[in-house]
Image 1 (cartoon, rainbow, N blue to C red):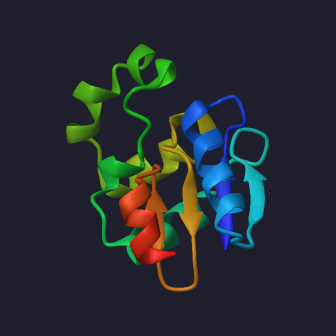
Image 2: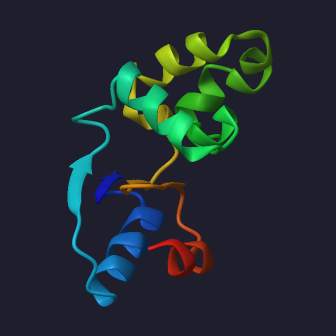
Amino acid sequence: MLVLVYRKCSTCQRALKWLEEHKVEFEERPIVEDNPSYEELKAWYEKSGLPLKKFFNTSGMLYKEMKLKDKLAEMSEEEQLRLLATNGMLVKRPLVIGEDYVLVGFKEKEWETVI
């Protein structure tokens, strides 16, 4: 299982603590220093079955500075994925990639069910 995190993010810290408390083995990847590629994001998005908007960190400063709330609706899926691949701070985190699932954000009940 791969977990993409931003260590300064309190939600990511809680998620990592949850994984450790539940003795879940995982590989940690820093989302800013090692931003997901377009190909990775496309594969994870397709695997997740989630709307693409769920992959955006809508509460992040960069998202707000770029006024993406208004722009995303006019962008194609490919344009949105390419944009996400430019900066890890645009991506919702933590992002968990398992063999047959993708989790975006930390929702404890969902994690208990899926992981």
